[in-house]
Image (tube, rainbow, N blue to C red):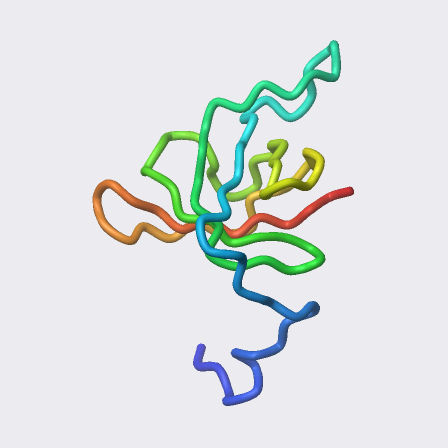
Length: 102
């Protein structure tokens, strides 16, 4: 299936480049009983929007499409998010698209 010239740019929110050095902290366990945020993964933020973020991170078994996690982008409060897509950049690095659920 090929995409037309306008289909590629059909995004529901405007994307913007983050400030240099912005990173995200990710807690792979989205719902802890005590509600705490205990990040175990750190990623570089490649793009942001009001509805989500694109991150670059070392290739890990977690963060598969459909996974739910909690993410803190820069100075924002942690939010629950769903992995919408995952792309391997090389054997050691992946790019992941996350959609905020809150």
